[in-house]
Length: 624
Image (tube, rainbow, N blue to C red; front, side):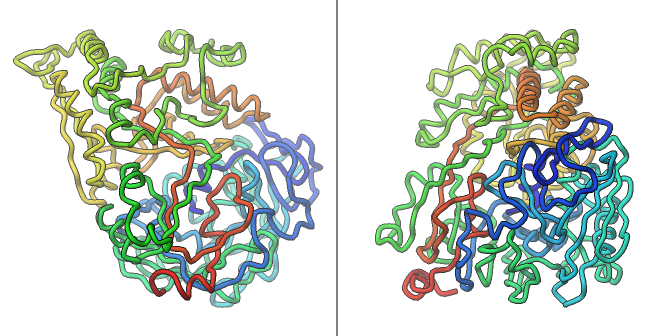
């Protein structure tokens, strides 16, 4: 569970047993009574859990506490990396934060991972909406406490949200623009007022994603990149750490919210540790030696060929494959259209034709992956075939400004012959480049000014080179000066944030009900904003319009239609070279753990709901 993963799944809002539907102008109550306090919020439809629920269905309420959980982990905070860290502030642009900082901070509400988008009271016991829907009032629990025993009050929440709006990471501050004011009416009552132009998912983003800071702590300490451990109120506090090496979070035994329904059966490990290594080979070797206890394997070659070491063979290390029911997202090489050479759509399409996925999957991935075609892969929001009448209604107003391909079958990468150098596709790529004014001159692909077409693939992971090398080779066959550059993590983050690159590799992880995070991925306002996720620099009014329609959709059905229309336009723009995906989690772990019978449908649930098995811990694997 991470700040960014929570952010990417947040959506529109509904109070209690009904939806709090919204338009662009205001949050209007469709089925919930204004002024009525509700115990939870969701995007569309009914909440699964009633006001008196005891715990989520996917936990073991009797799970024992204790033991250690250690891992490499996925990237966590807004500015986090799994290679290094140099700050303990994960909510600003400066610096590189460690993973797991969300374990330290409570939020107003907490996610239920067996529903697409529902959240229930954590710091806030209940919430109510004003008659016009432009003000939400959160009623806080009087027993909420920070780790030093000081009360957590509405004043702390108001201070935190105002601070994040002013100084937070752009992915936070930009999304808080329509939060007009946040005020503590008293110690237990918080009013959040919106401008009337807010998106429907903004209240949910605020309620579940934004951390609550101690006003006293950040009055005495600067809100900047620092290795000073922050004061939190969540289930864990920061323990021992060595910058760029490891960080341990210690369970707060007297955690004020441990018995709340949203926390029962959660946070069972006494210690949660994240380890850091400079490369993946060192990561894996450390796991084999018991340097840490759990890893999700993202490298198909390693999963297919290297999990045959003694601890696997004798059962001390277990392998498990879990279904991933969330959208697979969009992973690919993203082309920086801020650079003149990539502004022509034909050039971008030509670069994509040089990638032979079929060869790569067979020879590098052992057939594990599927080709990614859509920005909404593995979801009902993926566009397929010809556009429906409902999609055309959204697309027709932009027909004169969109490629004709948008109105035909959804643009899909062509299937190669698997040879590694599909001559048919390379000829098509050469034709597109020539049409765009890039011809072969003196043995190189040049424009009318004699400038060579060069493409640099930038990355900080040496393992990526073997994936990029075949594409680079094919681009060279086209006369393109293609290169790969490996740089350290800090420099890579800085160059990404400032868009100082030709091509970078990225995976967008979209939720079941995508919301305001899409602005940072694809809209004009984020194209020039440092640190945004709009790596390609997309600035297209039609895309801006469709993004807003997805965000403001009154029903899930309408949202899916709008997302499919958006998908068609994005794919026809050839802003990326789509890569691959799989809809399972490949997990490897030392046999020291137990877990509930039911997995949360939309989450791994590992750190949150697993626990240490005392008997296994005595006999299996390395010591804590």
